Image (tube, rainbow, N blue to C red; front, side):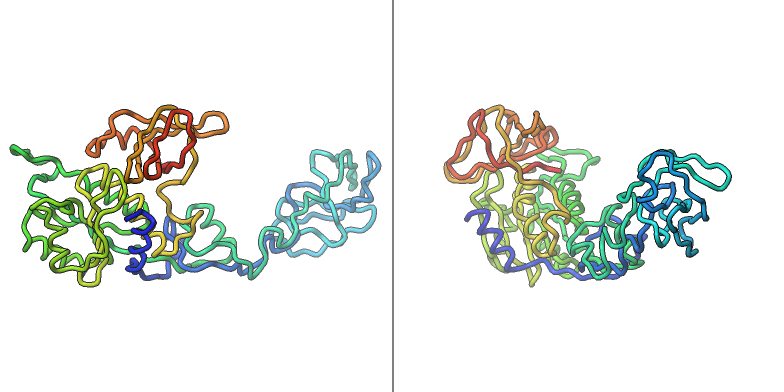
Length: 398
């Protein structure tokens, strides 16, 4: 089926998650569970944008205007000083504007002598920051589904919140399968390889705002696989497997899911990454990802990421993201596929005011080096080849 249809069907079995209240100090990189309305106006009152003099603009229309100094207002001051015609009040950045004043004169544009200030520059009304010009009390300042970076957290604090509701990261089980797999650092026997897929999936799951739970590799044994599925379903909110979903005799993930689980779909019109399985095991959503390293990552990016984002209500702009959808001019040809959407690795750079992309030659689904050396994926529709000079859709990986 198409990628779009696969995502639609996956969304029918959403990833479930909880929420929790978290202190502002511990909320970096978490996802906001509810939109926040400001408790206060910002600024809370009209205040000065710089150190200077609070004056009436009409008193400063002539060069070398001489005004009586009537006091000083500092930031945090509650002192009431009224500015009348012919008067000036020294004011500090952030201090409230005294009644009667409508402009600020920069301190550099003045000379003080014998209780008077001579104004040598313009009085500037726009140097007054008006109450509520940034946000007003009751106005939504941050949308639900936003990933909280330092600027967001500063906004939360400014709006008056010490604690906020956030998404409790869903736990996602990660299970590698296959007799040939060995943990890195261990000696290799004939026919064995170091397992890398689950390492990549741990990182990808973390980056999309979930908690990865990595289980020991499962050899090609139905009983062992069943026990691991049962344990993962009892401990986690979703399951990701790597390998065992194609059409071979030892593709046991597919076999076990067909015989004892619930399969929603199997195989998607995508290259690389076609043999994708999705369903549920004892009520827990399960994605059976391909065993080829590149295919595993591409399927996660193109199908699992939209499923997680939709389930958790991530904000489309400010939520966790692993890529941006962009338009790219090809510097070299990218061959399409007659019956599948083609996601070839591509190196995207900015050139002038456009994005351009170069397509390396080695596009094997086992070539992890290509994922390291490239920062994007083509998104060529079924039956479409990308010729040099064509402008195509692409995913620009973050």
